[in-house]
Length: 426
Image (tube, rainbow, N blue to C red):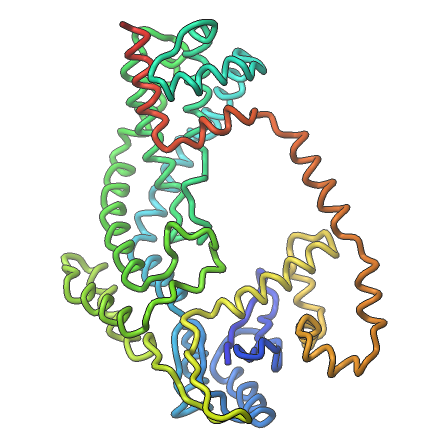
């Protein structure tokens, strides 16, 4: 059984229990908070209705841990690896990240770069051919012909947008993704490129002073340096747990690599033994690993069913329920057009999420008992037309051409442009 809750702002917590094998919502409750004394009656009700689960998976909430220990004593109980990693990362470098975010906001560098990019966009105009020459030039290491005159402006335009580009993010959110740290690091590369060209080219030099002010900000430099060290250690733990792989395209839907749980345990043990607790933050990290060790690595469980003995491996994440809540919220937003679901969660019927069980063919067959009217009504809703019109409008509003977007997404854009500038000087 997977258990978790969701809320928006000060709305009640919609708390749900779901069967992770059959993918069926078992029960729901709305609570003012996820305190143990409020969860215990809910868990007892599920136990009375369905019996004991073979295992439980959930996050590290104190209320959940306490209530599970009270109601499901002796039942295998496991912590979601994603939540475990996320909490460790937040504890490890959230303080430095807050400093970086605050200092960047103080400098107002984003607004300045956006204004500059807008000005540069007017200078270079809509010239796909020139952008194509620039793209080809970066492949060949040299640029000539009609693009030479526009090269400084196009380079500045591309680099300015490159600092904002988010293709390096992995889709897991903080602390797995650190957009403000990446932005600061890219500002440094932009400043270095401009510093090498500012005497020869006024198009780029106008940005040198404000960028230098940001890059040389002592609080920023110190926080970024300290955070980068912690991020590298955090990445090693991610690799050991074989989850949130940077090469995965699943984002929050990543259930982790299909590695043997014992080999994962050995990798985490090796990481735990090798990490050097040279600061209070690293000591807290190792303490967290030790504290939840027994709840991280689940052995396969053998159960007896109508077809004989079945071996079940408890899931390593609570993604089943996380996806369930995301789908529930996304569907509600589509129907209502409202971003905030505070009022929706406040006034919705507690058992509304059970409607999601209609997506389960076996459940649907039981509920409809041969009747197809509900399915036919849903088929009349043409959501594809609305989706396509929204996509078309987004494409119409796009002001950056396809070729320039390819250039902006190049991870080594500063290096390639440096080669072109060097060639131009020669």
